[in-house]
Each structure stands twice: as structure tokens, then as C-alpha cells.
Length: 156
Image 1 (cartoon, rainbow, N blue to C red):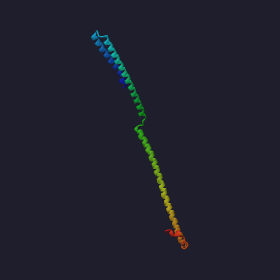
Image 2 (image 1 turned 180 degrees about the vertical axis):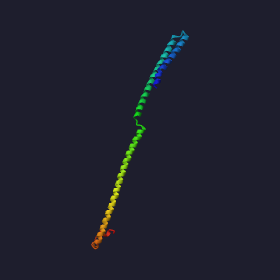
Image 3 (image 1 turned 90 degrees about the vertical axis):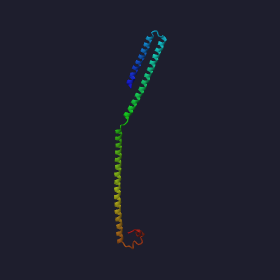
Image 4 (image 1 turned 90 degrees about the horizontal axis):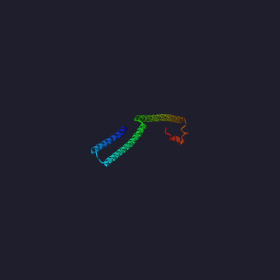
């Protein structure tokens, strides 16, 4: 784009030269042409040159704005993480989450095993207590326990 901007002054000068040549050629053909017509043509050429210069200035300003925006966008794009960086970060996050989940599941499995062991030990202890009560009952006199209502409620 900046190359196009560099070409514009040359094109403008060429066009002015063509117009001046045409005017000069026309002047020679008339060889006695009006001074007023020549003045009008010079004013038209000056006006044309001024408009071309204004267009060139406006074009240069627009191109400068566009180049500034392009540089801003390029800087923003350079700051944005790449797809591979995003995927890598997601993989790390997922692996940490999976490791945490695995640790919690392992901990819960240990707790369940401990509870099973505790229940088993409690059942075994309760069996021994009941067996001890049964053996005590068989050694004791049943008449002593006749008045105890709690023993009658226990299933044997």
C-alpha cells in the first residue's frame, strides 16, 4: 500500500504535464489566443493540482490509519495464546483434575474397607458376647432369672 502512495505524486505530476502540454499545443494552434482563456486554463490547472494534492493528503491519512490499525491487530494477535498452548493448558488442568479424583476415590475405597472390617469385627464381638451370655445362662440356675423380664425377651 505504501508503494501505491509513493506512485500517486508521480501520476499527478504526469497528468499535470499532459494537461500543460495539451494546453500549450492548443495555444500554439491558436497562436493568437485570448489571454483570458489562458488565465482560465492556468486557474483550472492550479485547481486540479490543488485537488490532486488534497486527495493525496487524504489518501495518505487513511493509509496511515489503516496501517496503525493493522499494527494494533498484529500486536493483539501476537499476545493471544496459540491453539497448542490452549490445548496444553487444558490437558494439564484435566490431568490435575483426574489425579485429584483418583486420590478421592482411593481414599473412599480405604474408608469403605475400614468400615467393612469394623462391621466384621463388631459382628464377631457381638457373636462372642451372645455366646458368653448363652454359656452363662446354661451354668446359672434358671429360677434366678425367672423374675428378670429382660431375659425372657431375648431370643435364644
